[in-house]
Image 1 (cartoon, rainbow, N blue to C red):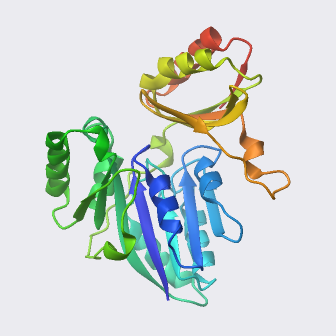
Image 2: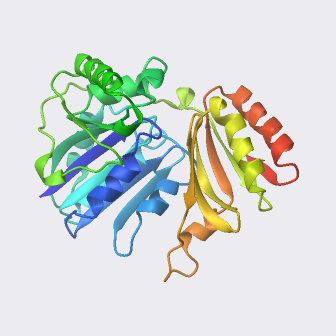
Length: 314
């Protein structure tokens, strides 16, 4: 019997960090299905390891008709491998309101093997949650359709702010268990979700409502100060910016949520020929918060801070 877990949470809440921590202690036969909003699945690059059963679905939400059939087929494929556990890391913009229907479709298509749903785990960014909840219906839906809510980045807020966040979550989903953490670190063996019935709704993830994303490809290695200034200038126009960039003579992982910028060295794996990450270096995936206005702003700021260094891919 395979147990399936769904991990949700808005952009930058810490889903990938949480999943990486869990995979360190997961059973040997574990499968992962990673969904990313952009054309490049950087989360898959971070999680992938030799021998892992990994399926990557990019450029949309697995709950949207654009990827839903692939999502169902991917789950069927993983369940039929008789794995112990499967983890689904959804896009930050995913609305999982019809997860029950999806699991029912998986059950109907299985030719061998069986599964049980272990619950939906929602990651919440304690710092940005009050800002994104009123703007993004997906955030509310993620919470309402969760069995366990993990408030992450608790070290970035006061105790009063944290209490306010918990109060809002409890109002949205009084049955869900709420836990606090930093860096997604939890004692998994003592926190497996208690699965209770949640009525399905029609998902709001549709092709016509899908947020636009653009890829900025750097042609030359930028000056580090100019690159940081560029990121600061575009933060308010994008929900999320992430990628692998060679800057300062080293490959760096860039992860930006609004104006919170994180740049850290990214170790390239050895043993692959070539390492998968090499194919994606110098590409930034940017998810717009204001549509074409965001893309126009991106082009202007790139012209100003990185002249002659970039190309835009729509």
